[in-house]
Image 1 (cartoon, rainbow, N blue to C red):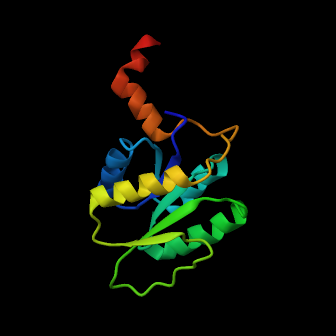
Image 2: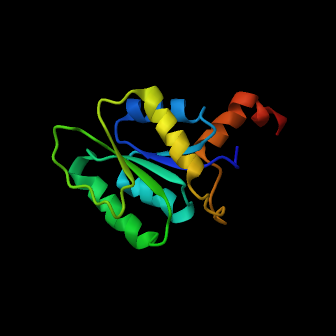
Length: 150
């Protein structure tokens, strides 16, 4: 579904990343995932996103590294960034880059609705020339059995 808003989930915990992907790919969104800052920046280097969902508790301060690199790579991006934080951690959140903050524990249905609604109102970036289809688009193709036609 290439016309859907494209989002990126940055979450290092495999089970949580897979659950978020499974829920959000059914929300009229094109979804990519990243397990680390390095992987997220690889996605950012080839694709533009309407929304990024990032866990602030990434190991080794990777969330801050991502924000700094994102700001350098995409200084004019209008990407809506939702940061997920643990209420027990006192982390500074730069309002110049983070658009919204949600607090753990998350109600997954509420989070899906927030992500969908925020992505829908953001200006959609023009498709990048070298940006491959989103992970969710590949998965939808497999679910439909399109791969059997080739």
